[in-house]
Length: 391
Image (tube, one colour):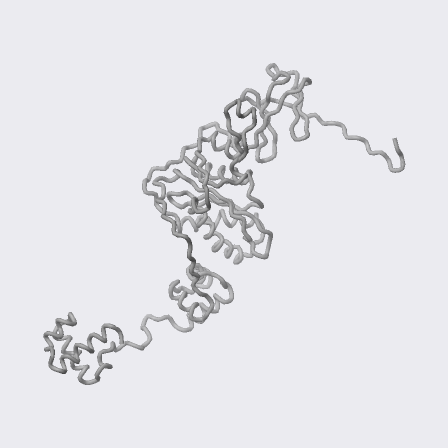
């Protein structure tokens, strides 16, 4: 008997002993007098058993057929071991046509011992409110993980998450490198525009944490990584996090990928980066953004459109300086480049030239912020000495 039935039994016993009238009992139980008369009649005829609901102990008329339960549990055991109830319910409806609420599936899995609740206790942290506009702040990070489980090598997911809406853009690469970070930001700019601020950690792939040289100190500049330089040129504020919890939006998004995307790759039998990125771009990202993205507080888009004529290949690149030699030759990565004599305007010896290596591997030279035509010098290869002969 529950608390309601125990209260009714106590009031009905007081009525039987003459301590209360049925009108007073109706006031105690907050029921109409006609209903209390029916309760009193059942109590006189059946005692405490007459106070229980007639459907108590009977199976619900809305319960699912046992065959559906068996099919769902068998499909989970065969195809989705380790899946959470929510994701498993989605896959059962999508692939097997078995439609069952995730809470119902949760109870079935816990009763059969195939899944148990995992409680995670962590340090208390106050919640930071989201930014108000889309593109006002984008969180950026890489997630090395066993994305292919035991089917392929470990790789890294480069991920960007908007703080206001939760929209994600990501791709897989072999390692978390500066080039991978620049490619991801490039893709975000082409799709949405230039964000106002970028929130990332202090990894060497993103920022340069070294002391300035004497030349930098005299010039009053701080050393920059190629990623920092690209952000400065685009007007993106780079905010550095002091802990993973500070950029919790993208860290929690990593957890969603490590749960759902790993299982999607397993179901599709994918074990290489190229196929995984194709699935990510064409199927997973549109679905995950449609499911988890939120509306921003302010409808105005904070992204800045890219200025016409801006070549992102010159922005997302590796830049260095070289000095022109007395014979008008520039050296870069053990290769020699000649400044042609036919150029009407050309740098003189001891002048500095900017060398930019694009992400596609091509090398480009600039002097006074303009492209500089150079010609690579092909040095003769030393001849091989036949075996048995000596100089």
